[in-house]
Image (cartoon, rainbow over all chains, first blue to last red; front, side, top):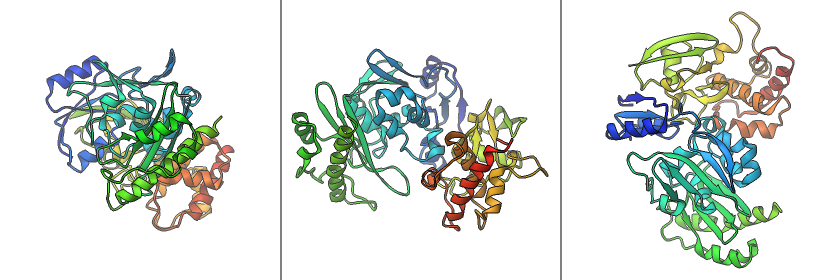
Amino acid sequence: MYEFKYHRPGTVRQAANLLVKNEDAKLIAGGHTLVPVMKQRLASPPHLVDLSHIEGLDTIEMKGRSLVIGATAKHADVANSAVVGEAIPALAELAGQIGDPAVRHRGTIGGSLANNDPTADYPAAVLALGATIVTNKRRLKAEEFFQGLFSTALEADEIITKVMFPLPKKAAYVKFRNQASRYALVGVFVAKRPSDVRVAVTGAGSNGVFRVTSFEEALKKRFSHKVLDGMTVPAEGLNSDLHGSAEYRAHLIGVLARRAVEAATAKD
Amino acid sequence: MAKISMIVNGNPVNANVDPRTLLVQFLRENLRLTGTHVGCDTSQCGACVVHLDGKAVKSCTTLAVMADGHEVKTIEGLAADGAPLHPMQEAFREHHGLQCGFCTPGMIMTAVDLVHRKGHDLSDEVIREELEGNLCRCTGYQNIVASIAAGAKAMAKSDLA
């Protein structure tokens, strides 16, 4: 790991000022993506701004009709939260499947979203549920937030403060994990929302998380796994690597989407 | 350099460290607590698991500066020197939950955290699922799972947390 200067602001405003003042500064919260890439010298930020000591940034609560999760809420907090379990159980289940128990004690929702790893779990939930990402500057809709591989709409001095999830009528996440890394080889989040249905896929797209509109339209007419029988996703534009070919991932999307709808409807 | 202070195994510790020092490096090299191991160094194998504020974390993926002001417990902190072993350590000895022993400190710290979270009556299925982040290259896990199940039960009757 290369040298860096460490900063520990007490407020989001101080953190934002540190980002403005120090070019190429990076935010750190749980550090479970950033520390490994710094160790590999794939990243060498000259300044680290630690968000983990900012009070109140990890609050989980219901506000009106939305579930609001603070940026530094850890995966274990979300997985075990009674509030999340009551409001969107599929989201608690998703958080409980990230990494392993020790990783879930450190990794944060804000960190996962800001990194936008194409195989991360949270982006699928945020896109399918139509969540709003709140920063120190503005509110971003999920579909404008994710901008491809490891890239987001966040500006250099912008900090995610919380994520607001509208409550779905039904939802489920099904993940086919890479056994070694525990990242999603393919993960499908299905959400039946008051006005529409959304199907978001992580792990498969060569450009990061994406929606399957053909599945969404079919499910909007009738929310049953049977309507997806025989429907497929083209392999074009999907990842192909030593873990699985694009064709295999395309096949998995169909299988996992059917299982997710089945799981969402079984919860009635 | 950054000034840090934390409680390690019940004792206050102060130090001046380079901010890039990993928690595991700080424990092993500054404090000479070499029971915590570095296995893969990529947050996968769990040989470096310690408790940070009572929760299992991978100390190879945590900066020492991030533990500033917090409480750390390592394998050395489970039972006092010369005193009887912690029930989870004793269970690993009794059920031969190890061969080379390299992964053992991490296994035991993960197991104790598991008992704190999920109680004393653990099924094999739960134990295996919870061991996802701890790799053992010798045993095939059978005796580790048996050790943790027995250790969890023994912890219910012990004063050691």
